[in-house]
Image 1 (cartoon, rainbow, N blue to C red):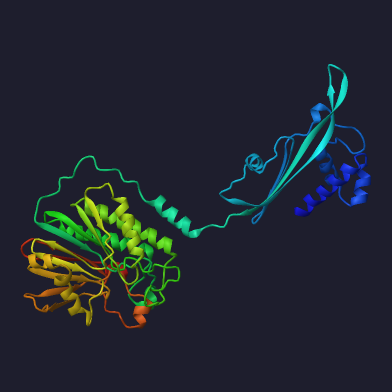
Image 2 (spheres, one colour; image 1 turned 180 degrees about the horizontal axis):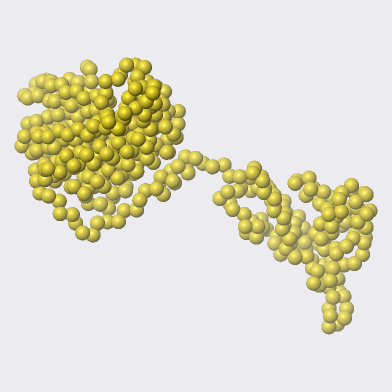
Length: 438
């Protein structure tokens, strides 16, 4: 393509010096084809090579050639009026979202034409400026990160503020919705692990099933507040390398990070709307060891989504541990409190929330990470009463890594708790998804 344009330029330069040369002479002299000579003659305003000039109805008009390939594009415009790059781009209708200009050349030369005046029956020579603009294009390199962010923003549903307030039931009960360790993006093959398949679609299905089951269980109580925990390894990965951010363990991942993030966001929004139909919702961000950054970004997106909603609040405080007081019940949240960490974690309640501790009678920590249920009771140092540490189960099945390490005793489930203001936790529900894993 470039060689063809170079040949035309070569013929044009020759004809400027030898305007009376014949077609045959140019073909033999420059070793080009007849079509190339005809094209060059047209650019110069010559109707034929060797004599006759153009009449007024043959004056050169805008002429454009466009050639596009997969990795390049070339545009050539010959005109008496188009003489800038911007004019050429607009005339050629170039999509600048798809293409970028690699380089361009603008040439011009004077062309003398004989213009016939029919009334005076004479021909007068007229000198015009002929412009040639050549533009070389290349595809724009896509910014995948920018595209992913823009796509996420586009996917966020527009929220219309509620015009009529809900008539929520009045009661002293709160519902804690705690579907821990979902691991959106985990990939497991049931034939390899013996506990069933797991991927993004399965995770989304089980997640919403667990939310709906727990809401059905809690329907017997007049709930006036819902505490919704986001994070706790909601996502399996948070980087393109598919490794844990601190330990650097390789992970089996179902798809790229934007795909995982979008599915987690969509499922989380759906589940919060389900909870919102019951009572006002307070969302608490508690990071996990797999998604400490990604879950924070998601929590900020959720917060922005509900910014005009009086019935949904989102706590994205950067502290990795949080606590809430309901009547005389104090519940703290963290991702891991196993082994030697347990006694330290227990004493963090009075250390970091002394006022809430003083008002409480029943105290608990709700943690995840270990993917199985466990309850331990500890006596805090220099305090009266006990603190229960509840280790909550995971909704996901084991993957190849867990199977190889013999961490195989987890039962997939999502849990919820009913809080009272005077007697601690009065009900504990478990939505099992084990049957779906077979």
